[in-house]
Image 1 (cartoon, rainbow, N blue to C red):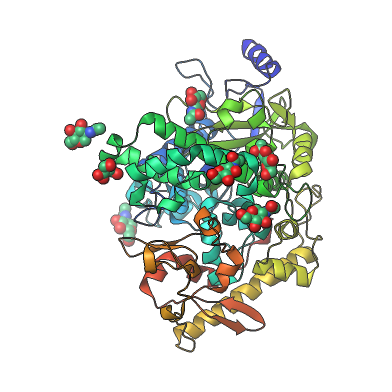
Image 2 (cartoon, rainbow, N blue to C red):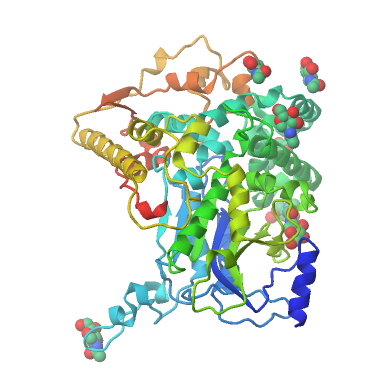
Length: 608
Ligand SMILES: *[C@@H]1O[C@H](CO)[C@@H](O)[C@H](O)[C@H]1NC(C)=O
Ligand SMILES: *[C@@H]1O[C@H](CO)[C@@H](O)[C@H](O)[C@H]1NC(C)=O
Ligand SMILES: *[C@@H]1O[C@H](CO)[C@@H](O)[C@H](O)[C@H]1NC(C)=O
Ligand SMILES: *[C@@H]1O[C@H](CO)[C@@H](O)[C@H](O)[C@H]1NC(C)=O
Ligand SMILES: *[C@@H]1O[C@H](CO)[C@@H](O)[C@H](O)[C@H]1NC(C)=O
Ligand SMILES: *[C@@H]1O[C@H](CO)[C@@H](O)[C@H](O)[C@H]1NC(C)=O
Ligand SMILES: *[C@@H]1O[C@H](CO)[C@@H](O)[C@H](O)[C@H]1NC(C)=O
């Protein structure tokens, strides 16, 4: 019973340093939020993509979860810590996609991160076939031969990629809420109508007005300008070298510091650490300042990424509970850091005893885990909801020294809490429905328009609505599906028209740009271009949200920039579709998700 005593002591201590489970526990489901692995900089010579280092990080993290959740063993490793907490009934060797839910957005480094992670979770293995994929019967031929999957039994995960036209993306990877999402915002505006969380973006426009921020800005301007001369001038205009772009600058510098020998002569480790600290401060203010409101007083608009993320965690658990534990055993979402930063604030982790661990930005590959478990009882029957507990674990990166650690959240004294209490705590701040997201964000996403016109806002189903789910599609969901179908149909119609040469989109004449607006890098860049940087490779990166755009009397707000977008819009079936020049090769590289989004199939209602 010493393990039990230790567990009790750990609970009394408020937060424990061990992720061990006591042997009477049964884990029924887990929801993991995984930060993508190391990638090339957002603001670099090439589009951001997963590096080999990043892939190794993801693989290692997947492997760690394999040890925790899939291993049949419960013995201790050398150091006496039990790292096993197997999920009841999950396939240990052969991937069973019906037990998993894996989602990313459409960023290539995100999708590839997910793949590398799953390779660690379910490595190739010959002669392993899960029952739900047909088992041995499907692998065997009539004459008795067994056919393996290629590459020594490679396993094929079903990874869902949610584009911004897919309302499912609201829960996971609201790219309008991240710094690069800020960049992507205008990009989206070109392809599908003003998609994004408008309230959030507007709130960021006031970022610099805060006196605390202004003071930090003033105190760090020399630091950044100095670094610009040393290093950052390779990628940034001088006007961007300031605290307002702390994350973007750090993102670039840390990549160079890791990979480029010469960079180490120009920036010290101490300077790198300072950049990291400032980046974290900036992002905590942009994504975790709970006192800033959007359209409604107290709506915590900046933390929207954490509010949706927490609600979705509860919804995924409810999904698993409704299925009696047969689906959603392991749920993985691959995201950027914003949901982490926002949730650390919402859960009060950033102000608690462990503030020092939750103030820095998470390292690549960091993972937040929520585990649904019962204590005592058997593992043959799924327990009733009131016997279920939830705990939160965090691993801040993938270094061998980083431990998966249990923390108490919401100011709780224990590291575990009853599921019902957890759901209630999340409900306090969570965003539980698409229509609520649309309202809070004041979003004009196509699916928000569809939602409000077909059912009126505020009436779509909540993931908290109890567990009396019958499997029927409610009118609200039907409305959403209808909207999605409309989007798909309109998209297909436009795509077909383009392919058949019926519609052709032209770049507006560049000379028609307003040449009275000055720009960085001389005449190449007009303010009306919403900040487009041409880089060596010829691909281009767009961004908004740099202070350069707003400061210095050159006010260019995001909406205004959009009206200057260099593609015309086409009206079709009563829906405005802003199209882009598909014939322009460099644009194809950047906007490739636009094409797939057009034909995106409607969403499986079970996903709610
Ligand atoms: C069974 O059939 C497959 C394909 O026709 C063939 O490749 C394999 O050699 C056969 N195995 C035996 C044991 O005959
Ligand atoms: C913030 O400052 C900008 C100018 O930099 C100004 O246009 C805007 O109105 C200010 N917002 C608030 C809320 O004071
Ligand atoms: C949040 O923002 C408000 C208003 O901009 C500011 O006064 C406050 O200091 C910020 N809080 C934190 C924790 O940064
Ligand atoms: C920051 O510096 C600017 C210009 O030097 C000055 O106008 C402003 O008052 C300063 N703000 C703070 C908060 O120190
Ligand atoms: C380092 O600084 C020197 C001189 O300031 C410059 O010539 C060199 O290109 C810089 N190296 C890098 C990697 O930025
Ligand atoms: C950079 O590379 C050169 C040659 O490969 C090596 O001599 C030097 O020590 C390296 N510098 C650092 C800081 O690693
Ligand atoms: C991550 O957590 C480990 C402890 O598990 C700690 O030693 C390390 O300093 C942390 N790293 C960062 C970057 O916070």
